[in-house]
Length: 191
Image 1: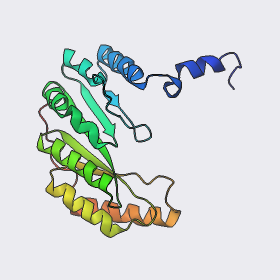
Image 2: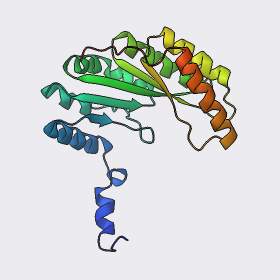
Image 3: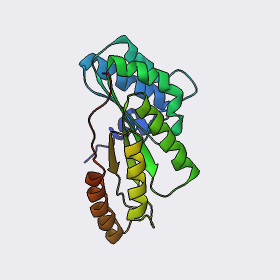
Image 4: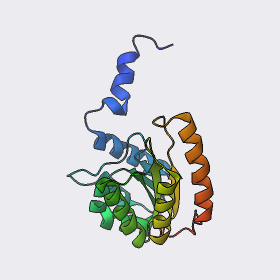
């Protein structure tokens, strides 16, 4: 049970209530660097978003040998492509890109971003996000494209947006197709 006196403190410390999310990310990066822990930028629920100012990931240029994981849902990650390539030379960088299973212009842009990251030698994973109506044939097409594009691995996020029957059907199809297409592949990267 939370004491009423600690509730305002919890709100002040929670990243969701902080005015500048990039400042919170900078603090996490600095803490991870000091502790020599893996650095994580973004999650599936709160993906990393590139800003208009200098990237908080630039802080990692001051050190070497860390594991860096970036999860994004935006093709704008390509704005930081040069930085990510340089970081991959100093660290072990992996980028996860959330891609909707159903074809949209945004999904195509995200796939292109993943393709370009993989072409630069960065360990790239796709996280497929099925929506109601997604079919196994859509997943098969995405996995075939990912294999051709040099994507390291493919995951699936079977969140609450799907009915239970759809979720179990897509899960079974995904795991079968993932093995059929040879995922995960050998680890690329320079770090």
